[in-house]
Length: 252
Length: 359
Image (tube, rainbow over all chains, first blue to last red; front, side, top):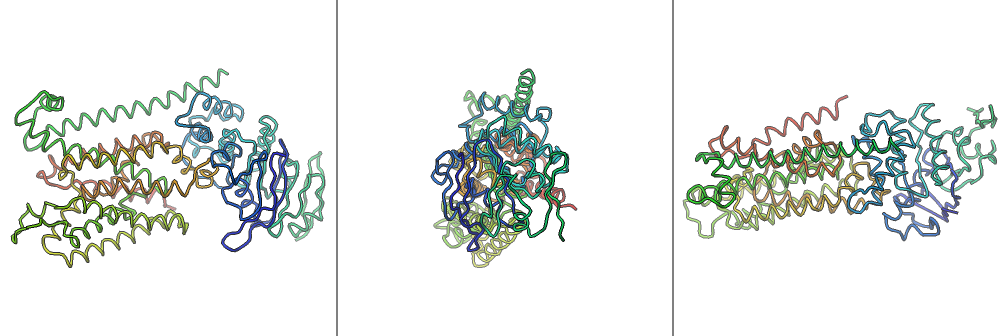
């Protein structure tokens, strides 16, 4: 297992947000994190990346405890894409180059530029390389931010609702891109989502959070209407259309 | 592969354009500096200025240049540089384009500290000041270093409050500027209170000190300001990648290995150091920390690898040109440069406000 989270708890002031969260992630897999608003999905990602320090528990990446690692060493192992990001006017190239920061000592070297070029090329962003990120569409901007995280050459990518502000086409584009990234770069992905259809279609396993802790952690083909009912409090039908899994709410 | 190579070439050309612009600004600064030394109530031919600066001239011109003009020009260059690097840093650290030492109340904190030193510690009066204090006495801050120290402490007080509000209380960037307004008001009130209890000489010293003026520095004070500007600029250049990461948001910066809290506190302290040093020696030079970074940002974008050096040169240029205009065109040789920078900076502040917050 590339990531092992054991008994992680986190509190904002005295209010518990996460209580005893445990799960594991295998290399080259996509884990979707689901739950209602305020369930603690984003907090979990931040704890895994030590942006927030867990009050209890351990997080091992390749058997190394991240609570004992420096920020730079964590950044070489995990890339993070936040739910909201500052729309600055750095160019696409400079934004992705910033992802090399954990590897740069004083100035970027040839290898850094080569990695940025390769990622931009792979993600078909090279034609925008010298354009400002703020001038790009939502979908393109999201790809640039994912590219920045990839430039860190991480083992694990943490994506916080990367499709929440995107139209249908861009949602599919970004999720397909993530699937390709997993295959091409052999990284593992934890992705928080609200869209159950996208989660069922692209994730290998789903981590359901309810009442501040893990309700279930199962592969996508083990999801049942009962589990979704317990997590979201709504009745659904699970079906397949042209081979794609879909979740259809039936209750009010 | 061809595509990647082209990309490298395009990016290199893009970077080279920024470097070329920096060199051009530097050359322009040297040209303006030489012109500024040559011009004034006693005009000196440019070639004489160059010969003197190269050490192959002597006589009256040598005295005028080394004792009067050059310290003033050097002070303008160093002061503009220091305030600009401070401005570019606080705008990034607080993620607010309106942030600058002046708009955050740091400059007013320095004024309060200086006023405290002048009134309470008698740093503004000559030890054996004659009863009929003339301008000579007033203009002579007997212990300029205690004024400097207290100006620094005053500036640090303001910075401490801003840091507390931004880092601990998580105030929004808009609220931080409002907090700066409140702090400025508080420090101005404190300064007025000190003036109320001060003697005529002390009040005059405070007023004199408050007017931003680059003409009052001697070489030692220029050297001290230069040392602080070099130290602080070096610090921010070493941390330029951290500043770029912080611009992308605190969470992103943390995820890229930046210790956000330490970076913010250390950065604000360094920015305050140079602001306090420059303000303590030159008085309040308003809005320069806002003007220079914004013009530089227009020219080279928000990448701190280039924004910091370009802002520094731009700050030096603005202050030098303003002072030279104040000396030769507008004033009679005594117009404080702080007045001119206010005239330029306030409209920019309003422009940024309108652009950033219009519905």
